[in-house]
Length: 242
Image 1 (spheres, rainbow, N blue to C red):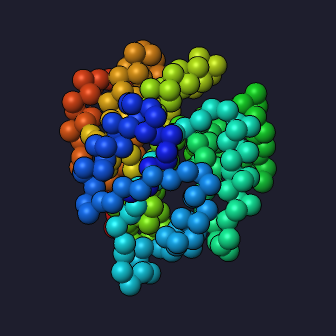
Image 2 (image 1 turned 120 degrees about the vertical axis):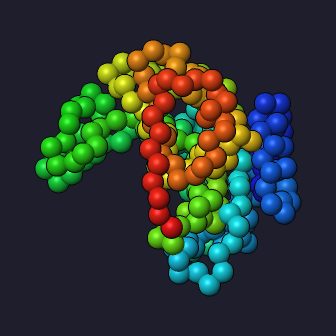
């Protein structure tokens, strides 16, 4: 397990890291900085992804714990430094690792439909999904389904309190959006209850009255959802595949 050095300076984030470390199998905790990450990516082979079903041996996914940051210039600056220091020939989500990507506007564009910004929001007749804001926790998955290439590392950020505060601002700026999809490149409930992000997020959405959190999952780890004490304003969609 890799933990960003700044995580240890945030008491609530540090406790999340400690809980995840205790729960992860055969874990060795290593602290890293943004300057270290390009070399770590190459050493671990994270820059050459493959579908899990094509691998002779499927590795245990390695968590990478960091902090969301909401200063876009700082995120871009650190992303650029990491990309310049990267000596591999593959790809890695350095922007997400630098703390970006918490909230992303999904434009749902197609050849005959343009939606350049939130000011142009309208349904795309060629798509089921309409333009919308989506909220993210990170990227990666512990299910390691045969068709998927997201099983070798899991980037997740652990400053949940700041995340929810910023999310509240985003909801206030977009009163038209009633449902909010929580990640489509990560199965967050698999990290609960140790991550302790879902319960605070569910309680936040229940407090809004008319906004709903949508969770996609394949896991049966629902104890944290039940214990959240927020039975309303959360929609859960289960799927089965492998």
